[in-house]
Image (cartoon, rainbow, N blue to C red):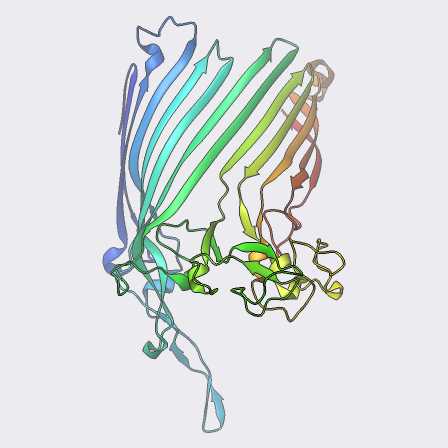
Length: 427
């Protein structure tokens, strides 16, 4: 239902969805939502303003549902398991290792959005400011089971995750005339997520338990790396006798004793956030007579990744030339390094701690040039419009991250550079 009256907009929606992936008593989910907007620029105190062409305030609140699981995960499913009977191979079936859950239901996200849309100085500047907060509960998560049950895992509803962030958009129409237009724009966004709750299990001190094997930790982001803190490379002359790493030698990786108990153990593992601090795009649109030009630069700042090329022995992380690893400033007696260990396939652990790297980057994502044929030139062909264009994508990437791409690690295809030449016509 939507109702509009001059300066005020009201919207109420409600939907009920059913999904076959859930149990018989929980197939349906109900998701209401409401939104209100106020066109402030139509009020008497702004109606004749030369500064604001448009100013609108928005508020919305509502639920959405997620059913993103396999159809069989709420049921008891058997799998093909052949066996030998009387010396003859016979086809058979047995229960799979996933325990069915007849109470499985929809995962629900409740979102609050506050937004401002504006246009100022005869729409010289047009933009949006939006803040949001989303809480997802009844998460569809796997729980690891004890092997004595005959099952290894089950899918169930539990816990809550919070996402909140800010999104900004600004376009500037710098030049606007018949033959030449030029506009600049940018988008900027940031998102913070953290796990608020998992299940009700607690330890002997009454503290809620994390799902360590699944990498889920209460109060921490859902995308994370749990590892030791890299603290440089052991050098000649270091005090090895009093080191918390008793097997250390020159060229070995040093990690921090976080709790300062004189030992390196599970208590010294820390959480590194993978999600970038912010994303941004900066773009330019230009048109001169029959020519148009577009350029887009994408920026990711504060991302963290565990680089497989620096941590996985099978991908050259032992710094053996035969495995064609990444060229790095590794430690040698005649050329000490404090960034990478000495080549040694038998060196003790902590190799991955030195592979946690900043994956920030700047990318020339799109570059496009087009020519629009004049109407007088194509009139006899029956076409109304005709445009010749060339577009390049992922042309340049600037980053300190050592991989084919700061977004893809070993085992994934690198981002492809693309050049497209085409003709767009309209009749």
